[in-house]
Amino acid sequence: MMVETTDRAVDRWDDGAVRNVHRDMMELTLEIVARALMGVDIRDRTPAIGGALDTVMEASAGASLVDLLPAAVPTPSRERLREAVASST
Image (cartoon, rainbow, N blue to C red; front, top):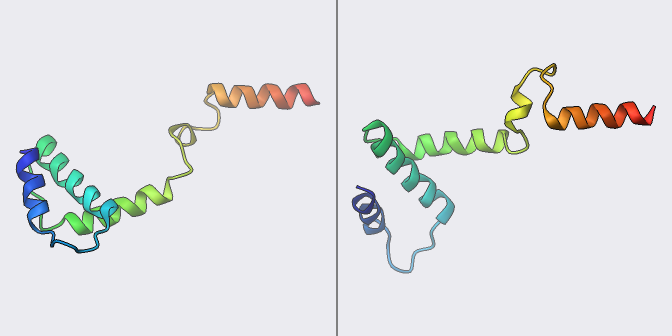
């Protein structure tokens, strides 16, 4: 399935054309993941879904999973920060 999907994508490329490799690989990966994990064909929606995914990734680039936890959750980085602040006062 992965080879078939990749071959189909490569067949659409023109020799000598300038390609946005990031976009091409994002769309290829998205199509493969959708087919392999969810059994759906998203070829007609891949550019739109890929664009939305790019937007989400850009918005969360500086965030980590720890940032999603409530501030009261004592993660290792939060504990180090608390200790650093406490030792400086």
